[in-house]
Length: 260
Ligand SMILES: Nc1ncnc2c1ncn2[C@@H]1O[C@H](COP(=O)(O)OP(=O)(O)O)[C@@H](O)[C@H]1O
Ligand SMILES: [Mg+2]
Image (cartoon, rainbow, N blue to C red; front, side, top):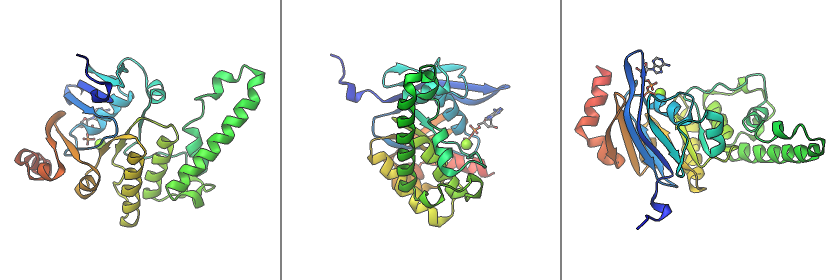
């Protein structure tokens, strides 16, 4: 009998491998996310977490392995098409366009999704204008959701580290992804913004987005994630409930090795 579709993982990453000049940064890593899951991805510095995200999002080509989203194999296609297929990601180090406004930074994340193709057709102009208006409304609603509204006309360069992380979230939210890869969305964020970021990630997940969250802050992982996956030296080291993972001798050892 065929399994019901709801049991198939939404994101199914199998045996991914990537080496840089002989260093196996990602070394046969598999991870599967069910629709609606919010899963943590932890591991010592250099474990290969960001490289794994680059492979899943398509900014790096894997040496081996496959990436499937909703049953479709995305392994051979580039990052823009993966984004259009519903795979969004944020960057560990946000690089907003400093001279553009906050609102413009959000809008650039959706530009070219519809516009370019229709430019040839004069009759499409009014449709483009209507779509742009909708995009602006949508961007404003997202900025409001992330408490960035009062900064919408400020150049992005004035944003604090935490506000830049929120802008990263806004830029991915406007693309309506099915799956979001969040790379350390709270690193370097001051405590006042941390609660807001945690709360907003939880709400994004409640709205139906499936999330894979790289984060070093274990309190944040425990508050947000029912399941956590641990990577070390490019491989899956452990997987389970955050409280169990925190007690796992192999996991503790991997972190101690990192500190040594
Ligand atoms: N573009 C690259 N070229 C060479 N080495 C890289 C590159 N990207 C990552 N690495 C190396 O791969 C390993 C994993 O890095 P990374 O994925 O950034 O780890 P993490 O995000 O878990 O801290 C590290 O040893 C890092 O130095
Ligand atoms: Mg990283």
